[in-house]
Amino acid sequence: MLYGKNDKSKQNFLTPIFGSLPSDRDIPKYKLNQSPIEPRIASRLVKDELLDEGVARQNLATFCQTYMEDEAVKLMAETLQKNAIDKSEYPRTAELENRCVNIIADLWNVPSDSNYLGASTVGSSEACMLGGMAMKFRWRARAKAAGIDITAHKPNLIISSGYQVCWEKFCVYWDVEMRTVKMDPDNMNMNPDEAMLLVDDYTIGIVGIMGITYSGQYDDIEALDKKLKVYNKTAKVSVPIHVDAASGGFYTPFMEPNLKWDFRLENVVSINSSGHKYGLVYPGIGWIVWKDEQYLPKELIFKVSYLGGEIPTMAINFSRSASQIIAQYYNFLRYGYDGYKEVHKRTHDVAVFLAQNVKDIGYFEIYNDGSRLPIVCYKLKENPDVKWTLYDLADRLQMKGWQVPAYPLPKNLEDVIIQRYVVRADFGMNMAYEFAEDFKEAINELNHAHVVNEKQPAGKKQGFTH
Image (cartoon, rainbow, N blue to C red; front, side, top):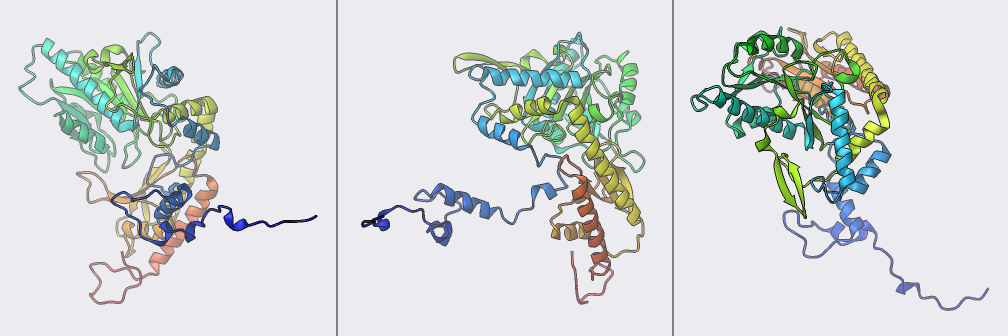
């Protein structure tokens, strides 16, 4: 074969990423570059910015999902451009959202003769806001009708002191007095009798929590419902229950289907949950359902003219991607009832195993052993004969990549420091064994390390210091 002149120098080759100009200088971080950067180089530079962050799947602090199947991720990527608010432009997406609401209402045992309503939200925080708003507006209308001077006192909301911060935000934003039922060592959830002592004519509702953030325990919603049945018979304005099931809403129906906490109870009128927790979707999706349309005041529903159509909405947020809604429907279709139950059962088994591992070490008092929500929560025993704290243990575990929070309990128990880890669907038994070994090794290292505390003389040489 004969060859002629071939000048390859004229061919256009991509510059190697780390031989490029952007990789060789400190690019502007707080103002725009003057010139564009090649996509693959920009992508690499952003990834490099994130190198020193923790691995999401080793984050045992969060309930939010850190894994989805490749098919779900691809589906989300393909639908990111769909605007969830635009029902006329994306009617099939709207239908999938409608199906999700119906599936969830059925899962929460809504009465068959109820005209229930529901909506997707950006996580449970927005759903809590909507549930609180509905209770306040409904209370105001009924209080006026009952002849109560609604300006004499602030309306109030009753909730456990283990509330998530979104409820504090709600009370501040909408000028509602928050009345908290304090947790104590014997009641790490809401005491229904204590809650009823706080009720009056200005109570817009009581929030029961299915999965208190601090401890993972459930409020006794059924016991609370029984108390309210008696109270509401003679009340000027009946008091409803809103259930904040951010964590338990997609877990309890599969693991404890006979536990009454949902719409089977007379006074439960609305429920919210996070699809991005045990609904197994990546962060950004929540749900709220009202038992009947009478519990959602019509003045909170806006009919918005948008792109030539009319859209009924009450969401605080407006435009957002529909990809999380579509992912939620994918999960419902993909797993079905039995699939969710199997995933949660395995998650439960891992949590129970890890709790037993903590108990066997002997230094800790268990608050939650994973038997309900799959979380493990514990504190150091009184006088455990160790010089380190749970904060030291958290630091040592983080050296191994594990993010395990240590923090004080809420008011009235703020002197109690606890540690908690959340078991999610992607935290399988293989990872659990690895974590258990790292946990024991971290404690052994602390026992043989030099930990400085206030009892030690100043100036002593330090090995490991928190």
